[in-house]
Amino acid sequence: MKPRKIIAGNWKMNNTRAQTRELIENIIPKAENAACEVVICVPFTDLETAVNLTHTGNIRVAAQNCHFEKSGAFTGEISVDMLKEIGAEYVVIGHSERRQYFGETDVTVNKKVVAALESGLSVIVCVGETLDEREQGITREVVARQVKIALIGVKSLENTVIAYEPVWAIGTGKTATDDQANEVCAFIRETVKDIYGESAASGLTIQYGGSMNAKNAAGLLAQPDINGGLIGGASLKAEDFGVIIAACTL
Ligand code: 13P
Image 1 (cartoon, protein in one colour):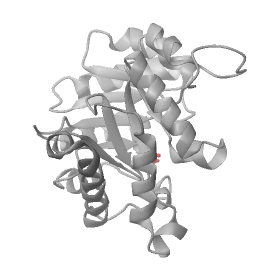
Image 2: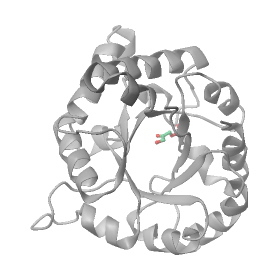
Image 3: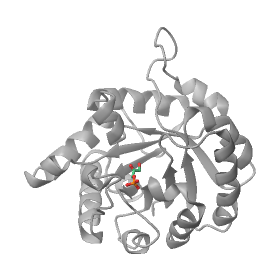
Image 4: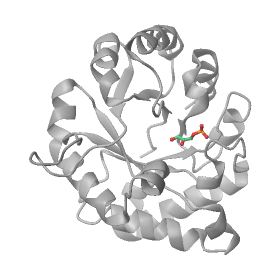
């Protein structure tokens, strides 16, 4: 089975409700005839607006984080059931910014992945090495560890997407070359194959993320092991996001 192609915009901590409305209205026509699935990953406070504006179109809405417990004394956290109820279909888990700034670890990523999948959400699990790790030549070790731990206890990959986001390429304007990005995505597929077998691995959507933009998207998305993108900065501009969506052909 061929993987579903998915272009996802990770808005990070951007856009008020009014800005969300405007951006989505501009993205809707770009997504209308898309050959791929389009996902927008919005701040918690924009989820309801995003769900209401997209429920008839082919844009899916994602949250950018969740907690792994069902409920309880976890001030400031949001549960997977809360996300489900509001109409989110995906949740991004383990983004490097959360690992870097908010103490996310491989173990908490795994707990969140399991909780989200159990609740019926789909997950976009982010992995990727730092510049230091790449320079030390341990990219594969790091990525394999992140992937394997994230998936402990996950029986089926049906609702799982993996995003390869080298930390050194995020928000830096330094994109991985087409070959560099494809090489690690292919390695992720191999790693997954060892656990889940050939058919699950070949059907898994693996995205690339890190300074993907309107200019470099076509080259990256043409790579055999890259099945979509997770886009930060360029997803905040409807024009650029539209070009990237159009570059994602079947
Ligand atoms: P940029 O596209 O801004 O580099 O961000 C990538 C990213 O972190 C998406 O999750």
